[in-house]
Image (cartoon, rainbow, N blue to C red; front, side):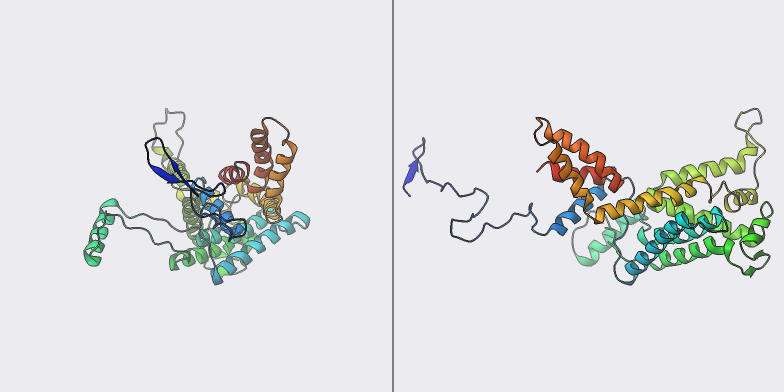
Length: 343
């Protein structure tokens, strides 16, 4: 092909019409053009990338992706909890809803310690000192930051907390005498307002475990608010009695009794709603997601508004409305719709 003269007198060879500036392209009978990194050939890779992007903006911190025996145990436990929730819908337990909530919490709480890492950070000075020591040992430069190891397996502490959570949650229904406590569900209810020493200890343990599980899943803000109101209940008697919020104060055993052995504490309305309604919507969303309903909602919205002048905007709104019923996550819905609509 003859060269082409540019205005400054230099010559450049003409580029074929089917060539690409970014790299080699396929000729009519030649090999196919290599796919760029932005276009993954494996759909599972693109799906995982979408989930990772959604996790960066998710309100709740993403947990571990377990595999091997730990992942199998987590899957079996989650399936058992889901089966129990469905059984409660069609064949409610004869012992009442509180008995079901005790079993449900015993199945869910240990999973939090296995699926969510502790994610505790070292102080800044200690991180800088460890980073400097590591740089001296390896001979490489360091900026004082020590990256946290990307552990995908639960630690020994996580397993210990999970077992402790099972024991503290199932204690009210176990027909075993432990000192002055235990004895089964009916005996536990009979001690309401006058807890035994074993009840007080395990109730305190369960309180601490719930605070730690809340911190792992949502961060420090909600546990801090809970501790603030716990302090208000315990130290409220020290406030000036002329204040409207002052009260006589509660003993610690009274607080534990209100949490552990009443219908307004651990086994109150929030857990009842989660175990009766939210878990059903979660199962429904998982079924729709695995059946491909999420992509169907996007395609349905695109087909409904494809002739509109504002098709992109209407498709995004309609598919977001439908996909939100499946994912239950604002960040996941935004990322999924953005990847599908903005192509």
